[in-house]
Amino acid sequence: MTPPDNAAYYHAAYAAAVLIWTLYSASIWWRFRRLGARPPDSVSDR
Amino acid sequence: MAGTSTWAAALVIARKDVAVEVRTRAAFLSATVFALLAAAIFYYAWDPTAVSSLDLAPGVLWVIFTFSGLLGLNRSFGAELSERAIDGLLTAPIAREAIFLGKALANLAFLIGVQLIAIPAVILLYNVPVGRALWGIAAVGLLAAIGLVAVGTLFSAMVVNTRFAELLLPMVALPFFVPVIMAAAQATTTLVAGRPIAEAGGWIRLLGAFDLVFAAACTVAYPFTIER
Amino acid sequence: MPADEARSERAGSRKRGGPFDWVFVVAVAAVVATIVRAVYFTPVEARQGAAQKIFYLHAPSAFVALYVAFGLMALASALYLWLRDPRLDQLASSSAEVGLAFTTVVLVTGPIWGKTVWGAWWTWDARLTLTLFLWLIILGYLVLRGAVEDRQLRARYSAVLALLAALLIPFIHLSVYLFRTLHPQPIVLKPSAPSLPPEMLTTFLMALASILLLYVALLRARYALARAYASADAADDEAYA
Image (tube, rainbow over all chains, first blue to last red; front, side):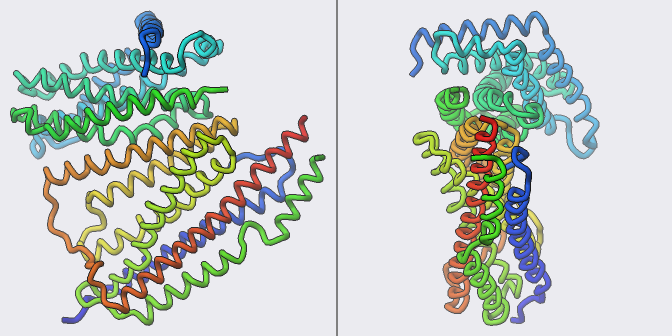
């Protein structure tokens, strides 16, 4: 029995997972950077 | 558990809230008008030749209660904001739980009032042959209202201190309403179809368990949300 | 401490590499190694085809998010209400946010697998529904946190919401289960996890370990961010005092 040809689906899923992890890591890094660069007393979110 | 003085204080607070609502009628009027309008709009949202209005009615009923209930819950603690009236309640020599129970009782009265208008309205507008099922529906309505009110009152007390209370309440409360709405709508469907109440036994037990767990948990949790 | 001194201290912590440390580097390397192994060195499953490989990222992410991340969130919340240590609140919210990212991975990869194997993007299966509602609850938790100005109030509100959410999960599960038994679902193909061949099992365990490590690394980073916010707040308070 030949496996169904659906490699494109798993490529899409892997790409999506890597993208989500990357974006989330970037958001932590970005928020940390903005906190370090901000003038005092302007914390707006956490 | 709460003693008699706690319940007495809770009743005083509930009576105060009901009296305010009876005098202004603002929230009750908007909730019932919303319920009637929604009942009419939902009718036209489906193709009546594809879905019979009878199959639609229980779902419509419970979606209406959820959202009109939220209208009332928003006001519950929001009304205490002006002139910092909540500080008066908090400094009163009563248990913190009494404030929660009083607010919850008032909200329960509010929701039952909405149900007393909305249930007959949906029955009439959707031509639901209720007959003896009416008492069953009333019981399911009461059980569901207790669960909605327990969770909704606590979240109303919490979001009132936030920046966008009216937007936040549905966001945190609706996931908690899911099992209640699901159980109530399914039990109502069973009853409206003329099947015996025993067939909805699982759903009714679920409602009862939800009421017990969340009424207790929210009463215990409330003091944590207000201490200074 | 004067305000600009506090600022330079924060800037100093930024120079030391920000919130990411060696654990993060190791975790990224482990996840990359897992993906390389899953893509190139793991056989294609005969019945489901290559799409079965989604399972290696999907299932470990689900395990890490639903059990580890949200379990830790509930535990830290309960401990916060007891001990009132702000670090427990920061830990709970960090775990919630990282858990949300992992749940998003679960909710995105799941339907892609479902489309190939079940033929539908989504079914209202008990696990799927529970995951979706958990995702929504955590989202509400984080929005609530963003909307409360007072730090102590925010911590208490979040802890209460997290504990009530933990109570809610069995009810959602039960109601979906009752719903399903009343409305039978079409028979679906389940992944045959217990009878995985050894090569696939190795890939799966490797994925589980590396994704767990990624969670730990991201949690450490997010917790460092929460600590940085807290010290910035404290510095602001002192600047005012």
